[in-house]
Length: 229
Figure 1 (cartoon, helix red, strand yellow):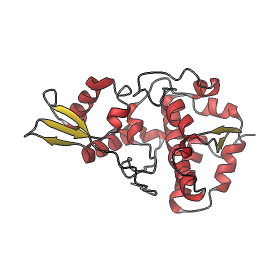
Figure 2: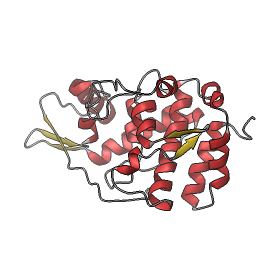
Figure 3: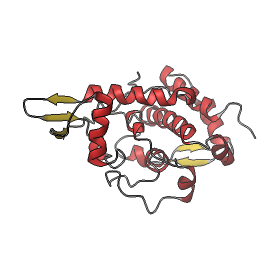
C-alpha cells in the first residue's frame, strides 16, 4: 500500500507535530505500516536519506525523552522507532545510516563490523559531516533542532554548521589557543581527522589556525528538550 504522503513530507510533518505538541500518532502509524521497499525507492540519494533521517532522529528523540520518558544511555539503544515495519534505534539512525555504520566509539575512524545488513543497505554512500550540526540529542551542548527539506538541504546544513561553530568556537590570541565543540573531537574521523577539523574552522569561520593549539569545550549533558531554531 502506498503512503498518502511522501517519506520526506511525513518526516517534516512528524517533526512539526512534535514541536507544536500535537498528536503525532497518525503520522507515526503511517510511517510504521508502509512497505520496506518505500525506504529504498523514495530514499535513493544521500540527500534524500539525510533529509529524512535527520528529521526522524530529531522528532523521535523528543518523543522518546518527552512522551515516553526514556532516559539515560538507554534512549539511544532502544529499538522503538518503527518505520516500514522495522524497529530502529537512535543509534541505528545516527551511527548506522547517517554515519555509514561507523563504530560509535572509534572517533569516526573504524567501521562497525557487526552492523545489520539492512542498515548497510539503507546507509548513505558518503558521510556528510555537517549532520553533526543538525542532530539533537536533548543535551544543552547539542545543536538546536531545525526543519530540513530536500530542496534546501545543502544551504540548511551550511547554515547549521556556521551557526553552531560560531557559537562554540573561541579564539584566544594571547595563548594561541582555539576552543571549540567536543563534537569535533568525538567524530574527528568524519571531519577528515585533525587536519580536516582545522580546514573546516578555517573555511567556515575564516580562522587561520595552523599555529594554534586546538582544545575542546566541556560538553554539557544537562537536559534541554524542545530546543528549536
